[in-house]
Amino acid sequence: MIGGRRVWAGVGWAAGGVVGAAGLSVLVVLRQAADARRVIPMAQAPPPRGDGLYGGKFRGKPLSMVILGDSTAAGYGVHRPRETPGALFATGVSRRLRRPVRLHRVAVVGAMSAGLPYQVDAALEYEPEIALIMIGGNDVTHASGFAAAAKHLGDAVRRLREAGCKVVVGTCPDIGAIQPIKRPLRWLARRWSRQLAALQTVAVVAAGGSTVSIGDLLGRQFEADPTRMFGADRFHPSVEGYARAAAVMMPTLMAVLGEDDRSTPTGVEGVRSLEEAAQEAVRSVGTEVSPTEVGGRARGPAGLWAQLRRHPWFGEQRFWFGQKPAPAPSQESVPSGRSSDSAVGWSPEGGGR
Image 1 (cartoon, rainbow, N blue to C red):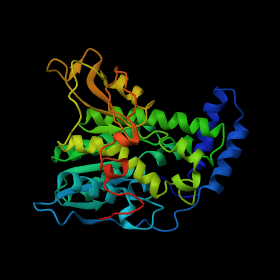
Image 2 (image 1 turned 135 degrees about the vertical axis):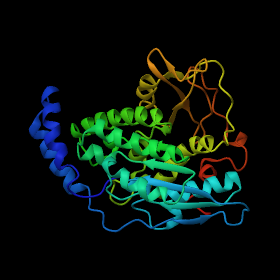
Image 3 (image 1 turned 30 degrees about the horizontal axis):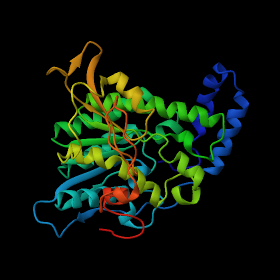
Image 4 (image 1 turned 180 degrees about the horizontal axis):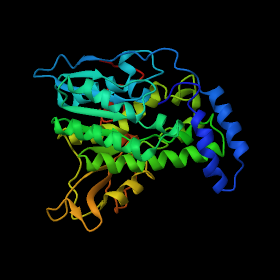
């Protein structure tokens, strides 16, 4: 996600105007920004690299996969290559497709969206067939221009798509879910995170990619079990936290690769204008937004059409927007081998490359 004690340096000053408008104390927010700089540690060491071949026992030409973004994409805070997000995705895809996957990580700890053009340059050298991008946290903590950040992301997706690469983006996580950040700064961070995530969704889908909302995925779990879901710095995810994020994104990744075992939608269920879909997605963690057509047309009166889809994860059932989900099945009724851990092809308790 982020690294460095100065990450909130710009946030305090930018927060002044917003907080003043909300009738809150500027001094309180500035003090909290200073406290956050002391709490959030510097990135001490680079995360392990997970680059390499996964599923070598399978036959066929390896699928070329790249992962771009910030420290969340790089897997900062884990200690083994197999625990990084890229390794989780590559293992899961290899097992589902029964095909080898060659992974290249170009994500950089501390990266902001403005740095994506350089990552795309590096990624294209590997002639990727599928790209995953996870970015946005540093844009929030540095209070950078969100419109510009979303444009950088959209441009990156467009370049990858023009090269024939499919793209899935995990949108900006909810920085306000991080417990060391106190109110009212936490409230501002949450608001900014959602604003950026919505802008990212519009930019990515317009460029031909698909998004999955990350939001406050780990917020409740952090409160219930902070030592398990977050790393030692209480800021980056733990091994289990990264596995949870990967499991949420895997259904979209497999669908983009043409391996979608979900039911086919009927009519226009879950279809919205892109702007409406983006706003709805940020309010529901794990929501996919992808391009679609209505009546053979990609555009409607309000702009581009988009398809919303809420994926099941960790015991939830599949359902389309507008449908009432059926009661969750009992543990005994869950088919063997289809647990949330097996969805990413690895669990902290065992398994690996």
